[in-house]
Image 1: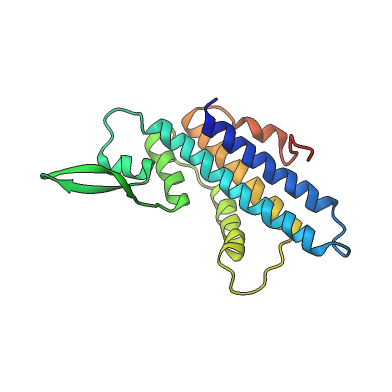
Image 2: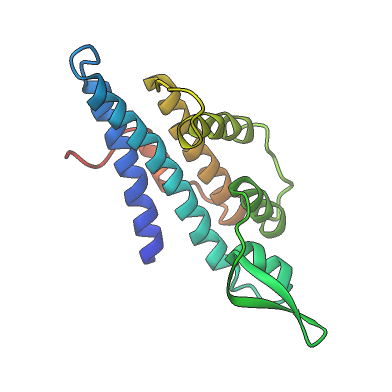
Length: 183
């Protein structure tokens, strides 16, 4: 397992542990701490998703015959016209929406037709919840059930990506929302 794979797995386990800590909390007594656990859990779960997607994208970028534009999406680098040819910039970052990168990986590196009906609506709902915290317009109170659903959506999204590309389940899916950590 590569360094990024280990890091991605650790981030997901941390997110699940913070969710467990939020569930153990007495909200009436420690609302600030409980909310902090929920916020941490939600944000770390999305960091884990990004890390897993980046790990898969890095691996797929090794595929021969990719166009500079395809590599641009995989490596999140700008494409420039240089002496009449498209070339991938070494230093110029180009960020793509996470959802677009996931769909790109499914469509371009899977031998199966894209099936979005199970994981995609759940991921969109999780992104909306994350956006309430990432781009606040009002004070948002996170609920345990919303963070749980978001983490499950992320696990199912990664699992769908693994099934599409590697033809095997995402190993952490078997543990569900139970963390390996006990901090």
